[in-house]
Image (cartoon, rainbow, N blue to C red; front, side):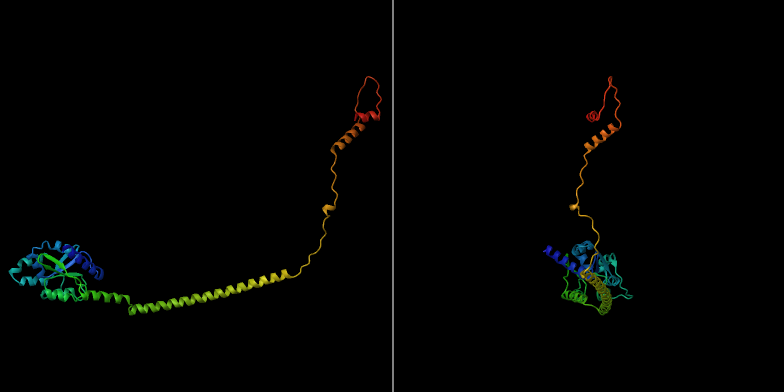
Length: 281
C-alpha cells in the first residue's frame, strides 16, 4: 500500500513540474488546521515528513493572517501557534487581519504564480482550489500525509493550454505574413538576376556557335596548296663506294720511297733498278 501511495505522489509531482513549472525546493503553504494536525498526530519534524511525501526538499510557509487566527483561538491552540511562528512567512499584504481561507486564496491568486503546495485540513478549501489551475493540495490522515491527484479541471486546463500554444496568435500571424512578403521579394529578385544571367549565357553560347560555324565553313571549302621543289629520290641515287684504306696506304708509302729513296751503304757496288725498288716496296 505504501509503495502504491509513493508512486501516485511521484506521478502527481511530475505532472505539476512538467505542466506548471514547479521546482525544488518545493514551497508548502500551511494553514492553522494543518499545523494543528501535525502536532496532534506527532508528525515531526514536519519538513522531513513533507519531503518524504513530495520526493524532494521543501520550504514551509504560513501567513500573518493564519498566525492571527491561531492567536484568536485561545490557549487550546497555543502550541500550534508557537510551531507556526517557526515557519517562514509568505507575504499577504493585508493591513487588517482576514480569515485564513481568504488570506490563502489571495496569496494563491488566479494561477498560483508563486508555485505553492497548499496544505490544509479544510475540505471546502481543498474543493475550491481544485478549480484553480496549478494548485497541488496536501492533507493529513491520522499519522500519514497525502498529495491529492490532479483534478479533471487541471487536466482539461493543461490540454487547452497545449492546444492554444499549438495555434498562432495575432502577432505571430502578422509577423509570419511580413516574413512571407520578404521571402517572396527576395525570390523575385533572385529570379530576375537568374534570368539576366541566363540571357548573358545564351548570348555567349550563340557567339560561340557562330564562330564554330565560320570555322567549319572554312574547313569545308577547297584549299589549293602551292607546289614546291622537292629533293631527289633517295632510292634512285647511287650509293657511295667505300674507300680501301690498305691500298691507299701502300700507294702513299711507295710514292714516298720513290721520291725519297733511303740511303743504304754497301761494301760493294750495287746497281739499283726500278724492279729492285718495286720489290723493296
